[in-house]
Length: 233
Image (spheres, rainbow, N blue to C red):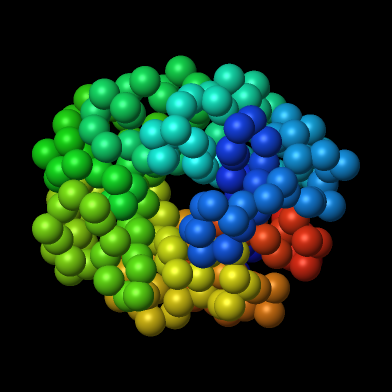
């Protein structure tokens, strides 16, 4: 059985790492993590690299909210330490292209994507290893601000574009440590080899996630508190 690779999660706001629950962004506070004495993302990334992290997921909350680009040079600096998977709320090809200079893999998430056409343009123009599609789910429905699509409809799109990696993110569970959404994972069983699982994962569930054949998982809260380590041997 493959060992699950834990991808550490950092949320950035005003150049510092922050923590909060279930995407409730106005209640975020500076992150307290066992990996650093401050909430400076560069210090945290250096420490995670020493702990053998392979890559790091960063959500730029300021860019996602279109609140200015306070974090992009921090992200670029972290990307020299660990390859960064970045979420900046990509809405179209142009935003995607802008971020290619700052991070290794750019997330295109259903929450912010303008249209399937923009997603297709990105996949036509750039190599799959630079793109991660994030399927954002809230209350078991596809979460999207701009597209008239449900989960089944988006699965059709995924079959067509065939990404290398797909984040399955249950937004309702983020930061809660309430457990991952198994029903949602079952619906995406055919994409199992590509899935990076995110949202509410707890230490006790790791053996089950491995058993289900998932290779990578996003862990924030439980990792920074020390409940889950990068390698659960």
